[in-house]
Image 1: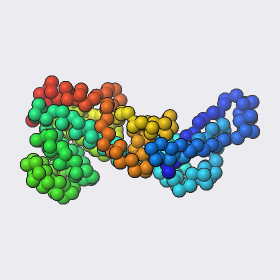
Image 2 (image 1 turned 180 degrees about the vertical axis):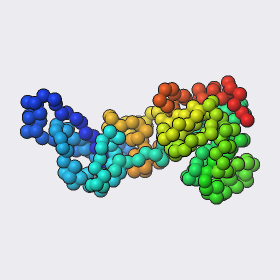
Image 3 (image 1 turned 60 degrees about the vertical axis):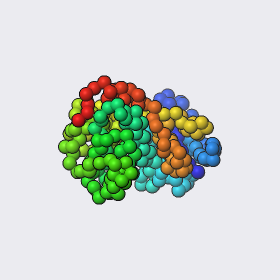
Image 4 (image 1 turned 135 degrees about the horizontal axis):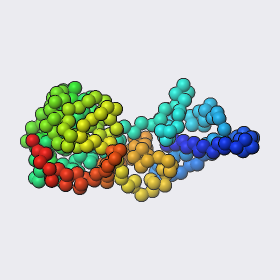
Length: 278
C-alpha cells in the first residue's frame, strides 16, 4: 500500500478566525483508494494553526514515513525519520526513453553523434538499445569497467563500436547527450547540443537542456493521484513502490526546461534541419 500526505493550509489572518481555528484544531482524515490492484492511503491534514503535531502524524503514517509521497513544499521533520519519496530513477528512465524515440526517428536520416553521460555507470544496459539506431555512440563515465559487457554485446549482436572514456572533452563532439542522473559538474558542450537529463543541473550547462517531462498517466491511475502532485512524481511512486513496471517504458510526450519545450518529433526536426553531425 502507498501512503501519500497532503497538507492544506487554512490559517486565517483575522484574530477571531484564528481563535476559532485553535478551538477547532488541526484535522486529519484518511481516505483509502484503489485502482488496478494498487491501494493508496491518502492522509490529508487541514492545518488551521501552528505547530503541526508530527508525533501524531508519525503514529498514523507508520513505517512509510521514510519514503512518504508528498509535495516538495512540505518540510518534513527528518529527526523523526520522515523523508520524501525520491523519483530520480524514474526520471532517469524518462530521459532515456525519450532519447531512444528521438534517435530511432533519425535512423538513416541524420548522422547524429550521441553520448551517454553516466559518471557512476548506472545505465550500461542502455548502450545496446542506443546502438541499434545510432552509429556514433560514446559513453562518458568514471567506471568504464561497468560498460565492458554491454559494449561487447553491442559489438557481437549489432556490430556497433561504442567508445567509452572518462574524458569529458569528448562531449564537445556530440549533438545529443543523455545525462540520466542530475548533472553536478560543468560540462564542455556546444551551444546547440541537446541534453536530456533527469533533473535540473546544479551548475550552468551549455546547450539546450531539458529536465522535466509530461505524459498521460494510464487510465485509472489518475484518479489515485493527489491533485498537488505531478504525473511524473506519482508515476515514479507507482513504478518503484507499487511495482507497476510497465510505467518504466513510458515515452514522454513533451520535455521541458524553464523557458521552452520539445516533443520527440520537434527534436527530430531540429536535428534534421541543422548541420549537427560530426
